[in-house]
Length: 179
Image 1: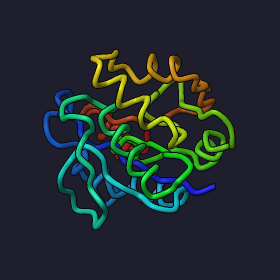
Image 2: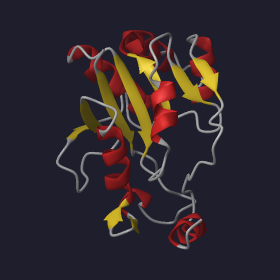
Image 3: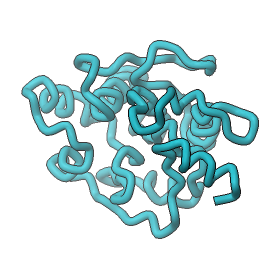
């Protein structure tokens, strides 16, 4: 089974106050940390939802249109995966620079696909869902990842470990302080 790593990095960072993908932790931008995590679990890594970053990776615009949130980035990744003949997409937000490798391995077990209940943008999605997600978005369907995943028959699993999801400068400061 081959897997595409999709780094979801198209958010507006409203709560963060600046482009959090480019915020620095441990000497590198957050987006670089998340890309390195995905590279350990995927055959190819792409950046979704932004046209440029400091990473020498393929950058995919949201699909079928901009401004659709994480599902627009996931839709672009599913289509890219299907076209490149990957079986699945492992998605991760650019604001998650630390996540347990064993947890990602649990998500990527063969089957119907899985996502984290505590952070629904983290998931392993069958590439075969590309057209279904396109249709859902084109018809104005709900933009919530969790509700679409349930509708698509994707299993939600509990992380079982604390997750570092950086939504504010205070979250980054806590991570810098060892939190």
